[in-house]
Image 1 (cartoon, rainbow, N blue to C red):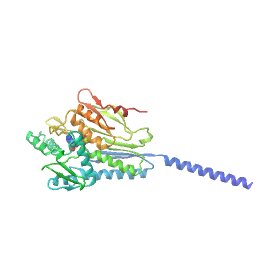
Image 2: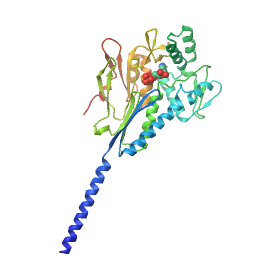
Image 3: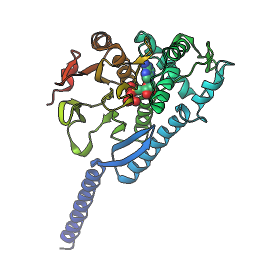
Length: 344
Ligand code: ADP
Ligand code: MG
C-alpha cells in the first residue's frame, strides 16, 4: 500500500518536473519582437526592431545599437564643427591628421567606391555640396565661376589615406570631405554588429529609409520584407522585396531636393559637371551591407540608368531598381532582382 503511494508521488513529481522542463523549453524558444521606436539621428529618423528572448535584453541591445549610431554621427558629421571629420576638413591640407579606426574604415571604403564608380561617387565633393546648400539658403543658383572653383577643389585622387598610421592628408587646399552618401549605411552596419553580438535572434535597423535586416523575422513572420513605394503615389507598392539578411538603400530627388528659383535641384551632385544629378527620380540598391547599398545608390543616381545598371550587374549579390521620371512611373532593374521578389 505504502509502496503504491510512494510510487504515485514519485510519478507525480516526475510529471511535474517534465512539465516544468517543457514550459522552460517553450519560454526559452519563444521570441519577442521589440520595437525601439523612432529616434532622431543623422539628420533623419531611425528605428530599430529586434527579435530577442526577452524584453529587457532587447531594450538593452537597442540602446547599445543607438549609442553606436550616435558615436558614428559625432565622428562623421560635417555639420558639427566638433566632429573628427570637421577637424580633418580644417587641418588635413596642413598636416596628416590621425583619425579613429572607424572614420578611417569609411574613408577607405568611400575611396574604393569612387574608383568603382569612375568618380560618380566622390567623398571629396564637399565644396560643391556646400555651394548648392548655400544657394538654397540664398535662393540664387551659384555662379559658373563659383562652380568651377569648387569643382577644381574636388577629386578623390587628392585624398591621401595612410593605412599604417591611420592618417588623412589633402593634396589640395580647400578640400572638404562629405560623408552624406555613405555614413548612414556604415552606421546601420555597425548597429547590426552591436545587435548580433548582444545575442539578438534577428533585427532590422532603419536610418531614414535605408535599412538592413538579419536573422529571425519580426512577429513570427516567415521573412523580413519591405514594400518599395511608387515615388509618384505613396499608396502604391511597386515591388515587395525579400530582405532576409540584406540591406537596401534608396537615393533620389523625389524626397530630398533643393528649390532655387522654382527649379528643383537634387542634393546629389554629378562630380563631372558640379551640377545636380537629374537623370533619375529614384535608385534603390539591394546589397549584403548597408554601406555598399548607400554608396552605390548615390553613385548610380549620378551615373544614370544605362551605366548604372551595367555597373551593378558586375557586383556580386547586389541589385538595382531604377525608377524614371515622367507622367507614368516606369522602372528598370538588374537581372537578379527577381530572386528577391519571390516568396515561398
Ligand atoms: P540620402 O541622403 O537622401 O539618403 P544619399 O545617400 O544619396 O541620399 O546621399 C546624398 C548626400 O551625399 C548628399 O546630401 C551629399 O552630402 C552627398 N553627396 C552628394 N553628391 C555626392 C556624390 N556624387 N558622391 C558622394 N556623395 C555625394
Ligand atoms: Mg547614399
